[in-house]
Length: 200
Image (cartoon, rainbow, N blue to C red; front, side):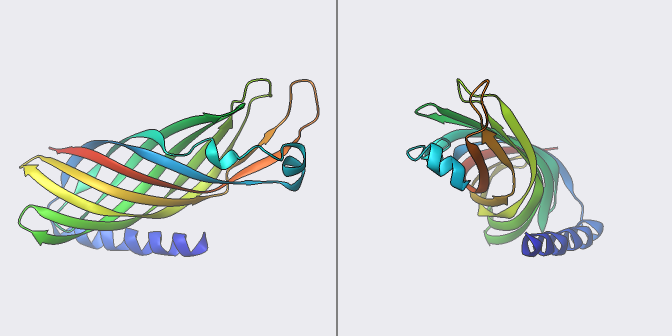
């Protein structure tokens, strides 16, 4: 996490320099993709639920994301909100991310750019399994993203990307009226997505 924070700090410093010397446009965007999570279970949860396979709860699940920020020819910074949920057997989890991101652009053609950057923010993990007490936790999240951006018109662009996040959000499984069976932690998540942006 410290390494991720360092990358984000460098990106923030670069964004200040870039946007202070170049005109920037406001933009809003919407993305849709698939998210898969890496869930780590406590020893007691593994003992009480040996066949839980919690990594399969949010696995290739449809994910939507809204964003808003500013961009120039050199890069962009933006805030985004992401929501994804999934279920497997008797287990259900929901994940929400609120992220601040910065991307650097690398032109490869007149209307095409590669991008890469860092994100830092908050993740809320909710345990919503039927028959268990609902539980949630708010944790930190940080990671990297990369992809390709294609300009379609002066104010419209399409993009495809990949994002990897690490998190420390955790929750627990506790049958209603009984002691908890154990805890689980969101170790990491990855997302492949397509999106459209509108600048103004």
